[in-house]
Every structure is written in structure tokens, then in C-alpha cells.
Length: 409
Ligand SMILES: *Cc1c(COP(=O)(O)O)cnc(C)c1O
Image (cartoon, rainbow, N blue to C red):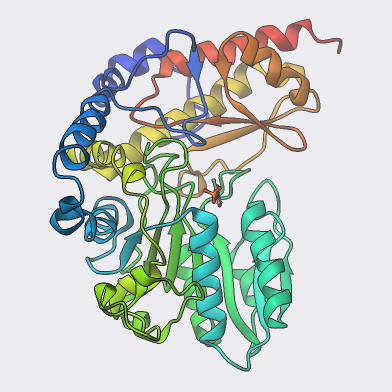
């Protein structure tokens, strides 16, 4: 796929898209004309209605408390293993589903910095997602550590060279996003992980914008820690719990700070003092949000059916289409592409830039065209590969053009 050849029509692209049929598996909105925000909240699958209803009448309503023994005690691990296998490139026994992304990030960051005593710095980039940055500010204050900030290009992202310049023998941990939430830039995880390991530090990758759309190979890449959410490209529903990955060889040397009974060695011993469980159970704290884990199963089944490689292919075709359409039809209004162009550097969203986009976004929403806005001037076009058609993207972009035409130049 090369940028610069003639732009095919959305109709042609849909007609030749091997995954086109899957859009019909999602619940159709009676209102929305173009949903370009699946990277913030994925759409529900139609089969999920039955799954949730069966869960309420069956596992919850009929089996009642017995379901804890029958399946729920193991659910954080079985579901985690499945996310690991289907989307993360992680062998079993290293992924757990638990709290929110923010809470899991907190637990793993604390565990990681405590595992590098004597090292005084944590490294993060200035363009990382706010929750990651704020957590590090809090943890640095709590543990008497110093933050070292990488200034990354907001239209690109963190490179191996920038990391090399920031890490040294004082670095305990580096926290980065695999895909930048604004520009969509894909960081070179294996190269950066290697740089960090060479100085004896640990790395935590935030996978919120990759799992389900861009494959990762966590085991192969020798990643230490990763956290990601399940309500974006994993379509788990609003507030669905996040997952954490901890490399197997690290698990028993890490201690997360929220000691709860579900993370204890023998959960039902109700023992006097806390002894952490071995393996991934020690990263749990209290009762896991079982109800919130139900819908995710359907999307994981679908991703497994289609294969993450084919999903990535469609994601690339969608982002390529947006970039080329915008260059052909929106550049006359001063709209630019605020992110990478190379396939290997593009995640599953494209950020278009224009000083007026803060005003344009609510006008699009009024027309039931739903992208989102990211400060200061980015219109983010999120392209969830299995639920988005090229025609839908084109309608959305045509509406952007219509509104740009009405703006005073
Ligand atoms: C969406 C997102 C989060 C969300 O954290 P929550 O605790 O689920 O609110 C965190 N990090 C990144 C990079 C995200 O894109």
C-alpha cells in the first residue's frame, strides 16, 4: 500500500474488503451516521445481548454464589490468558484482568520502582496520556523519586534515540505508550525495550490504543510489564476492567501495594498476615468486576475468528484512506495530517489538524458524525477495523469538508 497512487472510492474499497461482512455483527445505532470513535468506546456486538442476559439468568441468577467456585475465581486469569493469546502475544499465566487501567498502572508502577531500590528516576514522555503522567507524579512524590521527561514530537512519538538519551544507571522504570493517543504513532517496542534493559531498568508499556487493532508480541519482545484497557478496540463496554501483563520471570519478585484478600496466597484461609499469592494472583486486590468482564468474550471470539493480522491489514487500509482523502479534499482548507504516514508507524487512528477543529467537532456531533477532539487542534478519526466501513468514513469526512466550507477563511 503506497500513499500517492489514485484514491479508490469508498464503495470499491468496501466491495473488495474481505472483512466488510463483519460490520453487520455490531449493534447498529439508530442515530449515528458515522462512528469514528471506536478507539474511545468500541461498539457492542449483537450477540452480547444474549450473553449478558444468559449471564444474569444463569451463572448469576441460577448458580448464584456457587459460580465463584465454578468459574469466577478463575475468570481474571482465564480471560487474561485469552487476551494474551488472541491480541498480546503473551503465553498463558502472565495476564490478569482486574481493576481499571489507572489502578492497574498504579499497582505495577509501584511494584516496579520498589523492585529497583537505590535507583531514583522514572522516565516518561510529556505527550503520554494524562493518567500515566499524573500517576507518575503521585508515585514520585510518594516514593521520593524524580521524574525525567522525554520531550517527544507531538506529531510523532518516542523513539529509541530519545529513550537512550533519557535513561542511565539511576533509572528504575520507563513508562511509555505503544501507540500515542494523539498522533497514533507506534513506538518501536523491541528496540526501546532493549535500550531500557541495557541500563538495568524495567519498562511498562501502555497498550490502550493497540490491543485489538495492532498486534503486539510481548513475550518475543521481552517486555517486562504492560497494561491496557478493554473498552476501546476490545469492545468490553464502558468501564470494562483492564488487564495487566507481567513477564513470568518477574512475577514473584514484584510486590504491588494494594494488599487485599484476593491477592493473598490462600484466599479462603482468612489468615492473620498478608502473604502474596505466587504468579499473577498477587496482582489482584479485592473482588474482581465479573459483570464487567462478560461482554469482552464476544469481541475476543471475533478477533480470534478473523485473526489479528487481517484486522491490522484493514486498519492500515482505513487509515491510509483517511490520510489520502484528507490530502485530496481537505488540504485546501488548511487541514493537515498530524501523525505518521509510514505503515509501520501508524496505529488505528488518524489525527487531522486545523485551528478551528475545536469548533468543528460539536457541529459534526450535531450531524451524528462522531469523531473526537484532542487538544489543541486535533480531530481524531478512530478506525475500529471490524466495525467500520469505508463508506462510513467517507460520509464522515465529507461532512468535515461541508463544515469547513461554511467557516470564514
Ligand atoms: C484510554 C486510556 C487510558 C484510560 O485509563 P482508565 O483508567 O481506563 O480511565 C489510559 N492510558 C491510555 C494511553 C489510554 O488511551
